[in-house]
Image (cartoon, rainbow, N blue to C red; front, top):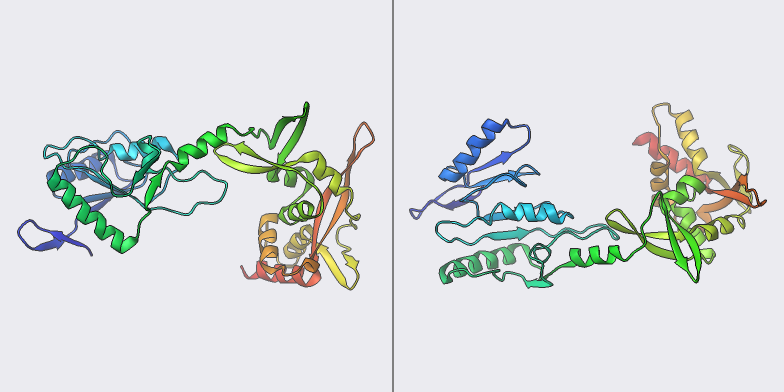
Length: 331
């Protein structure tokens, strides 16, 4: 339980209410009124107060849920930027999260105010000396407890500008003109859907064949795309696959395909219905050496020009396959 100054030299518990979409509108309005009268100190919410709610009292926001939407970020800030009768400044606190590589970074205060960067803790606009001193004390206490980012930069704005310069992926493909020729680059998702090239196979092909890649834009993220013709040509160099269920022996190691591992798990344990992604993820945890995996090709079709098209088949050692089935059973 947290405490705050009661205005008479003592302490009292912090009074907080949670606002959710499950609370009827009339009940929510009553809570808002309590905040304005000073009967509440803070509200917590997720996507409920982003717009259409104004407060003459609220002047602090803690963004505990990073967003990659500039519109949503500005709407959040709007909740505390109303002019206050006592000229109190607003205090915005961002909790910085680590986001997956290739995805848009979280929107920062520099993005919201459309500046290149902001020194952390520096006031935007004019505030009175007394308020500036009080804010500085609060900010320093927060720094001591949670740490800080020295300079807040407009990384989201830069990322969006970079995305705009990239070719756009549509239906898993990006057409890129180079040296007067249009080349087709495919996302990893398209390669898996059409050619069964999973993450293991993609890494194998990239490491052993000269496959060119380009960064491309998919919605609001930058993803790596691969020359589809080169991928297809590299598949032709893989050894032929065996019939499903027969397995394959190479040297002193026996292999089974990940697809067959899925089928074995389902046949052995009727309550197990694994997806390929589950099996693939478990394989990543269990595979330790290059000898644990093997790659083969399967005939897919023949084009009107006589070119043979193939799909890829990722295989793992029998021991790895057995461990995957056991892990699926125990999940």
